[in-house]
Image 1 (cartoon, rainbow, N blue to C red):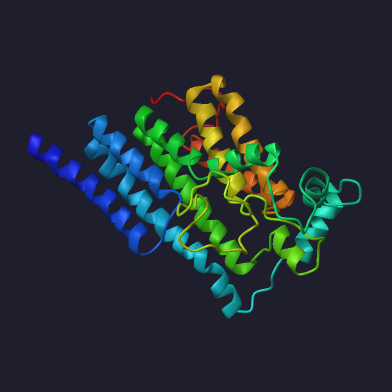
Image 2: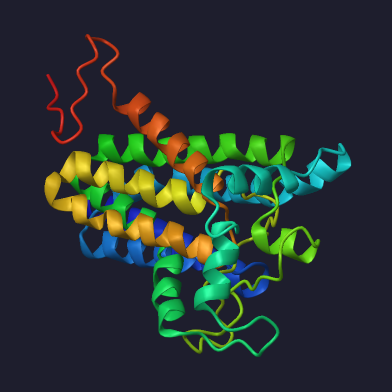
Length: 302
């Protein structure tokens, strides 16, 4: 028995070593540090076997998804798929105009530094940056909490998230979508700054908190910055109860930061939250009985 525990422990340490080697020689990925930390926690909790069995397949699928997402625009260009830029601006202007401007333009010109000057973040931008980077760890922390509570719930959560993320990749290929900052560079919007990327907020020289395996600048609609934290929050409320409702501040401010930072339109965020909500309802429905889904109460197994 002890030998088996040691084997699983070696397995976790091997995964950690592989991640570190990939980061050192190939790609740096913002999620990796969290995965390493969770693996170490599993060793401390003496749940090495469960971690290997439950986390390795979805993490592998997640890395595959990230690589596919990063190549979606290359495929879109190869097949000459149309870029959604003016269409998104028109939708945004039709439904969310503030003082004759779309929200991103209004927010930056009212609350940020004048365009063209060397960017020095305000206190508001420091605040928003903290929530913006929570996108990279919040869903994983929630996953770990659910895993400790109920491994079956964790599997619904993690495979649901990977499932709708992979579906989104198909959308990014068929209909690549430009964020506001790119539309600004194309002259479709007034000049905008990528405020979440324009300053080394934490003085982390050599450590990029916002780096992924391969970025895709044309994966704006639907927004995963909206979908992932909102999906995680829905699971928290369902399986941990009403005390988790105040944590809705995390997805909401994260989403607001993407508008302010010119990374997403409001319409992107609505699409992301709608997608997350549909998948959440589908995977928590009782298909064997008459649909009796209760949002606040965890369903007890028969």
